[in-house]
Amino acid sequence: MSAEPEGVAAPPPPPPPSGPRFRPGRRWQVGAAAGAVAAAVTATVLAAGSGGSSGDDAKAAATAPADGLRHTAIEISPGTCGSGWSVPEPGRQVFDLHNTSDTASEVYLGDPRTGRIFGEVDGLAPGTTRPLTVDLGSGSYAFKCLQNDTDAVTGPTVVVPGDRPQGPAAAPVNQHDLIPPTLAYQKWVGGRIDELAAGTAKLRGDIDRGDLAAARTDWLAAHLVYERMGAAYDTFGDADGRINGTAARTPGAERDPDFTGFHRIEYGLWHGESAASLRAPAAALATAAGDLAAGWPDQRMDPAAMGLRAHEIVENTAQFELTARTDYGSGTNLATARANLDGARAILTRLRALLVPRDPGVARLDAALDRAQKDLDAQHHGTVWTPVGKLTRSQRERLDADFGDLLEQLAPVATLFEVRRTA
Image (cartoon, rainbow, N blue to C red; front, side, top):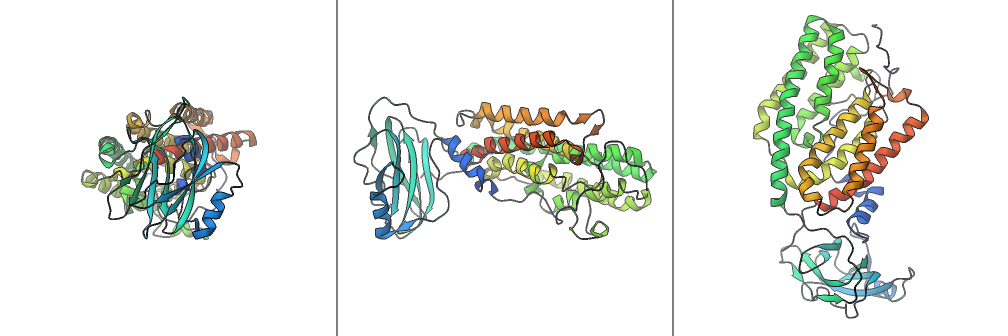
């Protein structure tokens, strides 16, 4: 078994099951992220799910609140959207939205002149009541009710008196708004895929020549190119598993013929396998990267998913890289984490023109990105990255705090770029 280079960790813990690590879906909605979404879009607490009370129990609850806030019962249906708000006042309050129709509804509370949204409830089921907590400033407001297969209905405009400033609100984003940044990002990814194809071809050449020292260096360089493209993984489809899949968490799973890609080669390079044994995996990786490059011009990314991706990238970094769950011997998880930050920045850069006027927390987001980047860079010494297992307790806690804060700052991006129905 060949000696491992300085700074490489001991054999890592078993990796997660095989297959792509990035999963499509809106996982940012759960846990602390959901609270961050509400806080950053506005002082509103955005309701989620389809729960709620029904019938007389809900009305009784609305008349006897335990939270000390003023409650106003609001009817939601195509014919009575927003009715019930007759004494408008500024300040923190609760609207108890009761769906009197026979179909589920989305409900927005917004400024009817500008279209800016101050609060929303999704999936309000028939006969149920859900609270919408808001802190309203002075100005004009109206509820909008959106049900399936019907036009949006805007309720009566209500004017909140006084001179209290309005809080932050989200200007709705539609599919057309997101097409230009999506195309710009696709073009950027295309350039990185070409780099990936060149890098994996170079890695294959190293292994074919038997130069495993060069292969270790070129493996990391090519792998980091791939890791910077996290927002496109869903579009890559099965290619992601072929290029960056992981082994099952069972003894000997690293020898499974279905375990391919960067991590298969990593395991061999840092566990004393011969060049001959790695030629087939290196050839398969180079072929997969070449196929991805050839097919990319025909792919189309989903604009509606763009706002989710930066949060997903950072979430998966915290789950897989900061825990070393994907370390197959190289000890370079922090290098991968750093590349993932580059990937998050790449998509945020393309969305920035839409984000800045909608998110008052952009400066905090930028600061969180910079802080995480600085603390990761502090673990890069020449050509060696500190393995996760060799971090001190304070270093580990600092990185965990960095990424926790970054996830909180990124959560509003997903909500702000959710494509909303407006008509």
